[in-house]
Length: 109
Length: 111
Figure (cartoon, each protein chain N blue to C red):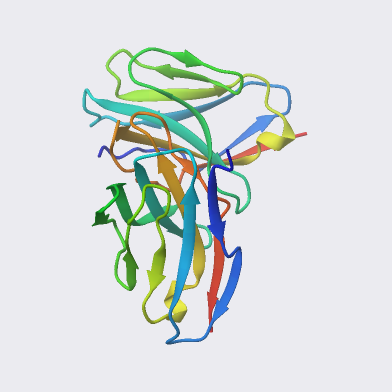
């Protein structure tokens, strides 16, 4: 499974968009990009995933570059409750998830 | 659906004791996994299963056994607990390209 690279930490002002980048330059054609977040010591929470096309749901948007070597998770209007560690994971449909250290996002009032 | 249920939520063991962490899912997911998370670190894969009767090792399998006799259950057994196994343990399940659903975790302390 491909490795991912994320910045260790980011800040975002409350109400502004949070843009979290992820590099996955060795991703293969059948690997999906998944985003999860973990608040305190709770179980990781699914946010969104995609293969090639950009995706949007009620929580976030996922922008995948055309060459699929990087992606960006966008939280359109960050709130204090979005403060968490965000993990970018690439995996095949039936493959395992290998977590890195993620990005610690702090939303500032 | 209850999702992924882990029991117990908290456990204290003495060094050398054995115990089983329980994990059950009611979503008919084929794939199940066990992770551990140490303070300030990401999750590390211990063991996983791609279906009933099939298990395999992850990144940090030593000191742990698993079995998958049914689709629903995936217990994790600590053979002889050590202080280094003090951690938070998460169980997760998924189907095909859908993402994993995680349980709420078991917080284990080995003294």
